[in-house]
Length: 343
Image 1 (cartoon, rainbow, N blue to C red):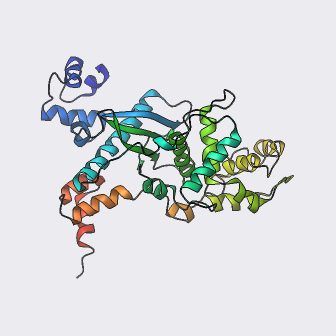
Image 2: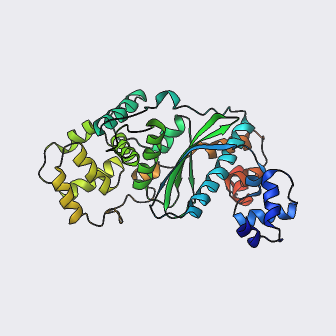
């Protein structure tokens, strides 16, 4: 509070901020504007109350991520969810969370069971064995609110449930707009895993490791990969790894790990690869999927934007309101309403 008070213009005291938080005093309009600037959030974010509580907040982050980065990511999440839930309310679409409550597993004792759970979910969703063209579209279809946002550099994604009056009203996943499509798809699948598996039930399998295993199994089903690459290989070529990574839309490093998990490659072969030619792959993606190419062309959340434009078309919100919800200029929104001008 002291730090925030020092950044404020107009100047206010930490005690005043405490009273605002406790509901004992209301800030003036000038103070509200100052708070928005100091916190780098919109006035809608400060004034709305769609998001009451975030439950089960999970970050996909670098181990050295600072507390302030996590706080910033949480603020970005709330801001986006406020706008998302607002447009649903405008359109009269009921927000229903807890979609995964009856699909969660309390424990998975082995890594093979994790693969089984990923296969079961694919079967439940009638996905077959082929690569999923767009995880964003799939999760949105299954009731998850997917947001692509400007997250701090060391955070690639986070997931949570939104609660109101103690009841879930939305499941949400946020991914960084700056990450490449290979990492984005793994992040989405990783956050999906958090909605499916509560714990491992095995001290030898850490929860984040289980989430990564589920993500790999969901994106790259073992039976499909074995048919594509064979079993018990002594080595695999760079060409094959790149072809497989582009076919499934995952990173080259994740593909190497998955080849070991399903039995295509021996553990020693994969370990040797990460010591030699694949040493830099965890930091620098070889032959990345280009922007708007392949999976990258489809791996973008669409539902929120569609709902805003539907509300504009039904004249339920003004162009000004649409611009605020979409974080776009009024000129851009008006051009999308009228179409290109002709002379």
